[in-house]
Length: 171
Image (cartoon, rainbow, N blue to C red):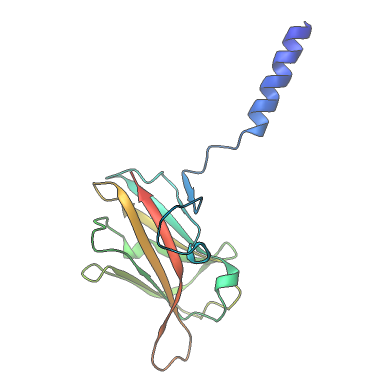
């Protein structure tokens, strides 16, 4: 009887101390030799694990400390060797877990850019999550650097400010 209780106690401890399924792919973790400074790496999550040639949802996050000014436009660029596909109708911007209404979201396949235009500027100091749903991952795995830029409201020259880089891995 004592062994049974010991075994149950140890099993219960192990089950409660282990993290829940690792939420697919959540990073940034510890990255060596990426060429991107650690303060410029942005957190993200691939909901369905980043498997090659599979459908996925990318949750690209911008921490509040990076949002020093309001943003009237978000630009996500990716390398020309990324051969995945995006659905511009399934792009969202979330602030404090609330969906922000968008004027438009465009995918410029030739230039490797996704442009997102919120109806109202996203305030400075906000935790922002760009959600790309219905993403078709590339057929071949690799490491892909997705860069984030914002444009401030009223910026006559529409200069893009670099927010950071998401280092995505598809395998």
